[in-house]
Structures are given as structure tokens and as C-alpha cells.
View 1 (cartoon, one colour):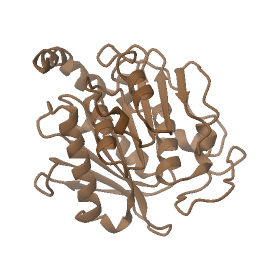
View 2: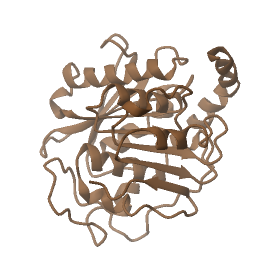
View 3: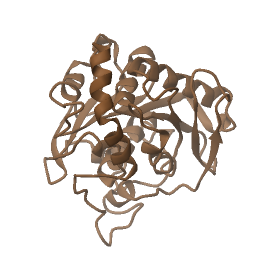
Length: 309
């Protein structure tokens, strides 16, 4: 079965890499409202009780859709051989530690795709107050379970051996990934329930034996017109099947398999809000998640378990 799947995926492999690398995006994603301040303003909602992990100013629509957040960032290249269990990657991190330590996120690409496909998430998320490790895979053809091991190994390296380990709260970690990397983030969540959040992008996986073990707060982002990881047979069953009490499914209108991995304000807005809410326990971001957004020109459907506890 896996041989047949490899052949099928090989037919689209070039398209996956080129489309994502060229920024193909079949969904028209809305830009921030003109004239609205990026940070702090009328749209910010004060939390009833502030989380000790809140980082950055009160969020606004313009702030979570901006190409960069309020934190200045730096990056460090992690060459092959730096750690065990993963190949190589790039770490992006806020330069200031004035507000304390940060949660960390490991991100892995899909079938035969290089780090460059998901690398935009590095600076985008780091500038919002996270340490982010974007990865290359060992072979490009690693299946989701293998990629999950690489995600977890990368998190272990971040918190124990990396040059930025002192900037990270090892108790606030998350995973992301696209396609087979999205499937990997689901496997990683099932195998490490201490993770605080997962954001699979167009997740691909045919084995669902992990579902009931997955209790990590999970936001799945799929494309309505995905022919490689069809949402009716993958993203939606994943959403309904996982045991997590906090979960959501965002479907991008007319989106193909590559759209969830392409840089844009819609994916960024909800990924940032989900990570802020569950990694940082920052209820100020509930305004973007609950009540659930209604279908619009960008979103064909959104399912959730609001309100968040």
C-alpha cells in the first residue's frame, strides 16, 4: 500500500515543492483593515485574569495578520550533526528576554519538500513571541511517524542543547507541519501529550490508530479543493476523531493542497491565535477564535469546540 502511495505522491511531488516555493495561493486572503493600529486598540479584549505567559501588547486584527509582529528577532542556522534525531534547520527567536521566556514551536515540511516551504513561519511566529525551529527532513520521503520523531527530537534539542535554550520555557512546546508534516504533528501530539498545541496544515496520513491518544489542543487547517489530502477523508475525520477537548478545523475556500503552507494572513492569523491561546494561555486571543468565524470569501467552514475552557 505504501509503495502505491509513494508512486501517487511522486507524481505530485514537483508540484508540491514548486507551488509552495513560488507562493502559489488560490485563495484570496484578506489584508489587514486599513487605518487600524497593529497593536493595542479598540479591538483588543482584556482577559478576565491575565496569563503569566502573556507576551507582547494586546492583540488586534491588524496585528495578527501583519507580516511581522512586535518582537525584533534573530536567527541561527543549525547544521546537520548538531543534534540527534533530526537533520538540520533554522531557529528564529525574539532578541529581547525582557518579558521572560517563550514557548517554542517545531515546524516540518511535507513529502519531498525542503525547509523553504514552511520557513516563512519562522520569522512570522517568532516576531509574535515564540522560538521557532523550521526543519529539513532526513530523506524528503519520510512518512509521518518518522517526521513526528524528528519534530520531537528537534524540540528536545531546542530545550536542552541549543544556543537559545535559556530563552525557552520547556513546559510550553508545540508542533506544526504541512502534508506529511501535518500528519507528523498529529503523531507527535499522540506520543507526547505534554505538548500544548498542534497546528497541522493540510495533514496527510492514512493510519489513524493514533486518534484517541491525541488530546493536545489542535487546529487543523485544510484546503476545500485539496486533491492530495482530501479534507473529507483526512482533515475532517482527523478533527472529529482526535480526543482533544480543545480542537478546531479551518477550511480555506477553494484552497488546494499547497495553500495552507503558502504565506498569507489567514493561515497566520489563526495559527498565531491558536498558539497564543494554548501555548501562552493568553485569553486575549479568544476574540479571533470564539465565537467561530462565519464562512466568508476566505473560509468555507470552521468547526470548533468553543468556548475554550
